[in-house]
Amino acid sequence: MRKNWAIALAASIAIGGMSVAPAIADPFKPGKGDQVKLGKRAADDIRKKERVLPASDERTRTLRRVASRLLAVMDDGKDPWQYSFDVIENKQVNAFALPGGPTFFFTGLLDRLSTEDQLAGVLAHELTHVRREHWAYAYRDSQQRALGLNLLLIFTRANSNVAGLASIANDVLIELPFARKHETQADEQGMDIMVKAGFNPTGIKEVFEILSKASSGGKPPEFLSTHPNDKSRIKHLQDRIDKLGRTFPAQKPLPWAR
Ligand SMILES: [Zn+2]
Image 1: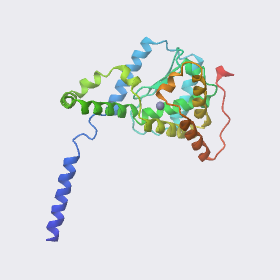
Image 2: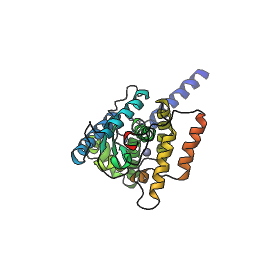
Image 3: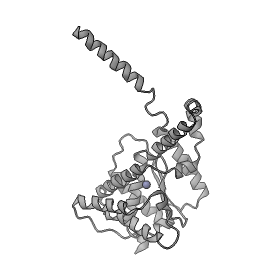
């Protein structure tokens, strides 16, 4: 009797498990390979449309040098990310990473920064968005919200996932806002990466101080529209620096800020 009961229980667990586990764990989240393809397509477009500085430019060389120090300490295992780093000649005070790895900084932001550690802070934050797939989760959540409004989408999306991905506009890749919890994760893990790479983590806190100062008296910097800069964000960063309880290398001035 006991044995039969155990078998019956096992069977019901198996059936219950099957009924709750869908065939694809997360059907609306673009896979890593899709993220790389989408990001590459958008990056190619950006390089055609915007004034991208040449590889010989001091700002591009500096960005790539700082990026390579961060990449060297990031353990991405078998992840397919294809990182690239470019500077766009534009007064916008902004930087962004596309899904899959292509990363762009505007000269408007670089002009506001004074140290490599500040630059590393923004970069490490953006790289965390890439490696933790924050865009893919934001996209999934936006699709699920749409499903709640229109059940018909279940059939159209489920049957033409590839077509659906191809139709994702570049704007959606750049402008879809990340969840607040993912912003916090990018702040925290970005700081861990910059510390590991030998940068001074005070740099990222200073970036938010510089940008919030810039927003008093005029148009707020574009970066802040996707990175809400309330006092709690700066305080959270300072708390993490204090918790590390270490002294850090002196910040290194950017070549153009000396
Ligand atoms: Zn962010």
